[in-house]
Length: 461
Image (tube, one colour):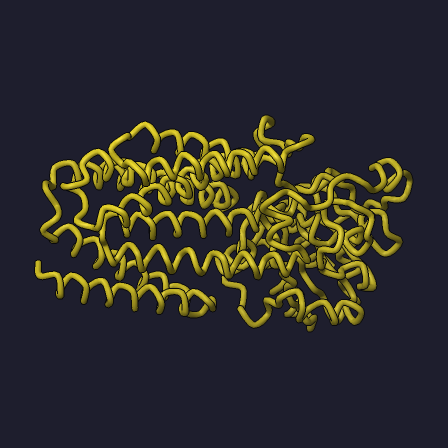
């Protein structure tokens, strides 16, 4: 194909990507935005396959067949509760692909790219460095989200010094690649050091910071892809990677603001850790258990109810039961809204997706800043599986892992009902004084089962 036609197609694809981001900004237009982005990517891939730089299609179609089969299997098998882990893996695969493509460009430079040698060398080593950090950092993030025991928060004295030494070593090895790209061993030295750096950067991060880490790794994967675009002298890949990288950084900054942390605190593991009372000190003799029948009587006199979903709702797949409860309350004249914390669940937008899946009206779903001022006028706040995002200790400057993080002020409601399996801590690993508050009732049990029993109890009144 003529270069002008190729670049025109890439420009159209880029416009589709931008329109996709705009569409994804609101639930009503999210599906259309997703389809627009998919069309843009399809166009970019087809044009690339038709370009004169493609040497053969056998391996490409084999890759499409294998990868497509795996993708289809994953799409049908992965549960909504495992989507955060899936996103972390997909970020990692993007980084890993960049590492391999950039390495291939060093093996056969004349057949992979016609870019200037200096540009190619710098772009190659940049792609390898960022891609390796992304891949191995994402594997650790996946392990943390999947609750692998070996991936628990690991902190040790001199951790920041070690990371700095690894980064400087990677830069020195990268300089050798740029100086003489023909010595392939230096490239893999860069990749090896970057792999260690990716592991050590993510392994100390835990608690409620994991959604931020996912955003940041997503940005890294985009930057690695953009660098690979320079390696291949492919404008489409440069544009797509830059869009992903920039949007990921913006989202990371938004999430950091929501967590009242700086990006450096998250990236370098400088967030507060430890501190706070033990579970026995917080809960001892203060927790009040309730039953569906008692909660049904409580709701009978309520005029306003705010439902706060958390990761436990996703685990129990209780979103449809929540919708049934809300519909029943509304039929009795109760005003119902949903309060969403920016980092509820284990990835950005996790709760919004679950509620949309149950066809809950978008107008009833309120962000934290909008719903917080209304809790003082709320008769009953129903918390379903949330923990860290409603933990009052976040308001205290006590050195705990979530100190300073804005939370949903459910404790200010007249009564707070918490639906939870047990008093086990959230992802931050600290007890929650909300569970022992004077105005809190604990409805223990599986989220979906407890809500269905509550619906039955309300109907039986």
